[in-house]
Amino acid sequence: MEQFCSCGGRTNLVDDEIVCSKCGTVIERVSINTPIAPSYQNYDEQKKKTPKKPPTEEEKRISYLVQKDKREEKKDHVKITSILHIEKFCQRLNLPKYVSDTASEIFDDYRKYILKGRNNDEFFTSCIFLACRHHNLSRTLDEFTQESDIPKNKLSKMINLIKKTSYEEKGVYQFEQKIPSPELFLSKFSNHFNLTVKMVHKVKEILARVEKSKDYEGKSPKILLGAAIFLAMNQREQKLDEIAREIGCSTTALKKRVDEMQKFF
Image (cartoon, rainbow, N blue to C red; front, side, top):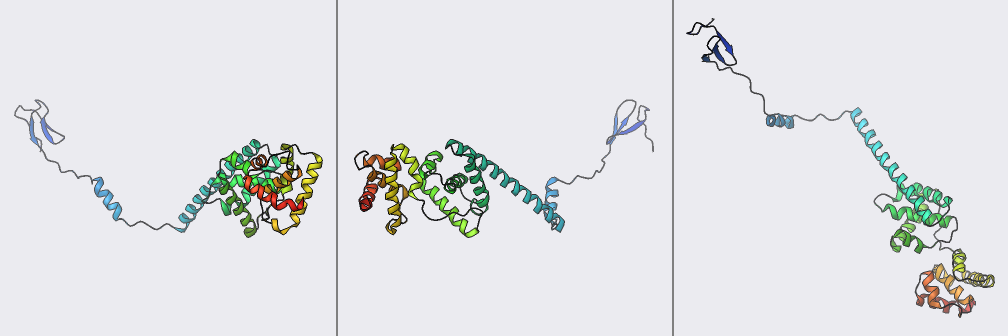
């Protein structure tokens, strides 16, 4: 029913108030019951109480494929980064490209067996060292430890692990467990000590006799070479401690080997 104000004006409902359209007097306030919106807290509680539907087989398959792609992407990133490190490391040591190619192949061949949970730098540096051995290049472990700042014992441990794995997993590259021949390092040290052709021949002769003896199996090839050089130089032209310092061993160890090898001279 239409209401009128005392001034004779018509009334209108504005929000929750009845107001005179003529004088603006509020005739009456009306309480309108409006539904109260549920609080976010109640909504969250209801959501927690709602049981989560188990994923369908299709959802499981999609989730597996997504995770697999992420793992493969991470592996590819590690591989590419390591190959770049291998190439740069080989350049610093002035190694030919075929060595870095072989080291990259060794890395790719054995990384699935070795790399997980281990130091990546130690692994790829060891791969380069084994690539040098594969191509019969006379590079010592000391050169790699100095260039990489990796402790010698850790690098040696990683190299032995790769060798062991090559036998167990039958990778593309098979590494022999035997110690390399001392002659492998002869060309490098002969240049440093300025050995004549006659002296080099004498060193080879001594080493040939040493290698026939079972008493020297497993001995350090560098110390054997150092002793042979010392003996071939008639023990006068070069001091014992200088040879020991150059090949990376103690003077005591070198002198002991010299005394033992006197019978071959």
